[in-house]
Length: 293
Image (cartoon, rainbow, N blue to C red; front, side):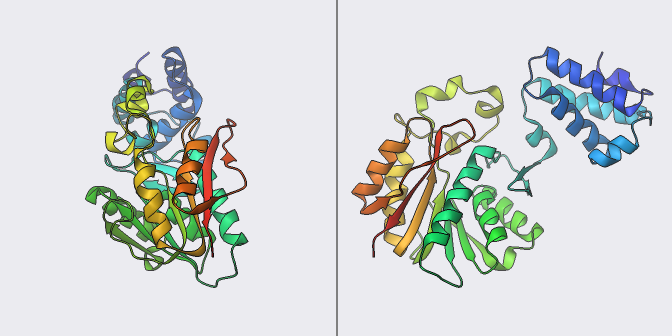
């Protein structure tokens, strides 16, 4: 049954019918995706949907749901369809030039907070987020550190506009600035913390990524070169330059890349953290290092 045929059906029945379509199409999270799309069309959160479970869909709502469900069935992620994604509990707007923030990246925030809190006490830590995209990592850190300030950089002007808007929406604009440059090329520092989620997918592996990623995330935010490490070779020496003594660097890593990244950190004069922090799948996802005094 198409979403267009759902007019007049109760909201909850329409949601369940859409979830079955998504499940039949092999979509990983059919129930969640159906709930999010129905809620978006109706302008309701989960509580509102429960309260309105018996309200019938109008013909206009049914047609709008048909358009959105068609996009999802074609492989477009729900976050792209809705135009936003939650990260670290913060709602972040997206644009075509930004990655969709993923739960794995919250591991970077976790390790960054740990390493910053292990540093010598400082009242107003300064943070640099290299390749900031939506601003996800920087804004998550600022939300946890009320005395911190930060700078996000990106080579995409559009991404910087998105990050700036996100900072304003979250009430963090006075503590976050955004600069157009490649990683830390325009920064001087010193910073107490540098973070980054750079491109790290091997060029030859991009064609095998899920359609939600390869067809909808910006290629330049994915492609890390032949071995996936091109960006690290640039940003790690830059980070070493702008970190203050005892400052910390934390980067996101791809599968089986942590050891090589730690080698690049050591070569840049940084001391790797005791061990990378694994994501929920057990992959060493956040790799840290510290600049020696």
